[in-house]
Length: 211
Ligand code: BEZ
Image (tube, rainbow, N blue to C red; front, side, top):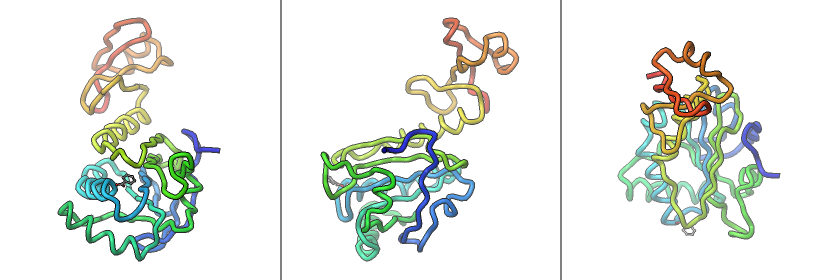
């Protein structure tokens, strides 16, 4: 059965371009992003891994450890990394899991046989400090991911894990948030001293509480 939000992210031991890791130990108390790549030496993946390296400070600022996985071996990864670095003008500063035995791909249901028998789809798992899965995304091999969206959704996940707010459509860091339905308008006025704007009894906006 596929993994669902709130499930514990399955643990595994794997060889990576930065040594052997126990996934849960490697995560420690950080947030994590595990994302899969159909194969080494493929064009879209080369751009995605370059983009991830470019965004190193953006992930670090949010306390998110990033780890990629591809069902090729370590020798192949080691030969591919210089290409990624050359093409994107970056240093690949995060581990890439060598998953030739598909252990991780199977644990995380990253192979969708009706899309491809051999390669993974582009899965994303955002994992919280409690090791629980907070977000899953699945893209086909032919569509590179939107990394601005990945950072945006991490901002929302981190905010909503700390405050009784949700984020509206297309929300971005700094914009107004929505008071969750579990909080009455009377309580919201006390909880959110920056103000509560009632549009409907069930739609109440408040400025981002941690800004
Ligand atoms: C790629 O990663 O570039 C890719 C992989 C499979 C199909 C299309 C593109």
